[in-house]
Image (cartoon, rainbow, N blue to C red; front, top):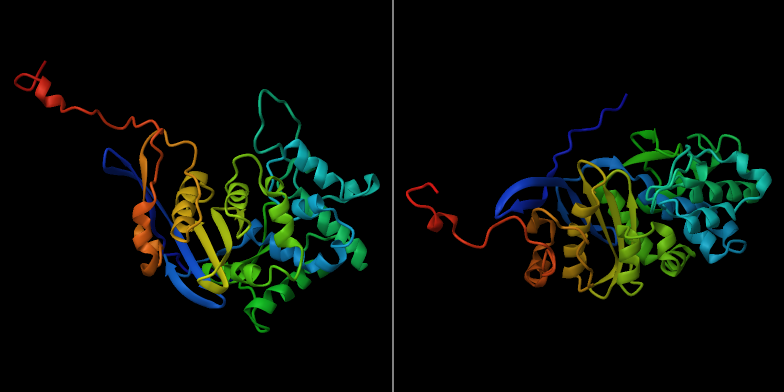
Length: 347
């Protein structure tokens, strides 16, 4: 049995209270231009692509689904949604009522529920329901069996491995194939390999409908205040963003300084951490001249980025990026010298 090597995580972000670090977020970041690794910080760690790979997984069915899917259906097919009404509606529209029982996503509740709601778990609330529905529709169009579509020896997964080899080479083999949280197979890859995939998404964005679908319907990709949806709406259709469990963010970037496509992957060591990943993404996009806001909630410590995760030639631009907003509450200090009010060290 394969045992993954020890991942040598490095600090990415520090949360400081009045200048003293209290929390350190570790991880790894890879920058790939075309097929060339131009910067790597944190080591070429081995992990799983998880849902970050949906834009590549769905390429298996791109030709079959393109003519029959609406743009909303195309977007929900590559989503990891929060289970809002619009997400469930788009996912359910992909299949006939008689096919709904074929869905094999785990029963789940919406990730974010507004107000007091007592919804029972349903397969359609699962973040991956749109992809599962699209896979079932694609299997029907290709004439593949739909029973067992979540198994690693099913034609869908074998065809997905062929899509991977188009980017990484014909001899590539996964070291480990595991069951993802939604039940579909996920394969182990290094952070550099994942970034190479995202560079290819930028390079070949006109060869299928994935890029345009994500740009047309960014809120279907994640949902309200989700990091990937917010990036998709903020960067003038030049940056494709997709989150993945656990602690992954992939960025495919169209930029004049990187004509072969720029792929950047951020992996947070301890898993899904929206605020920390958002802080890193803000600096990464900022040094590439894409304006992107800070996360909404910074109610305790202030975040400070470790500059080494940015390529040396771009670090000069970090000085102009503010890690928090002026309107953020600054409650980690007093703005006076308390000892000037004390007499002989006591009240």
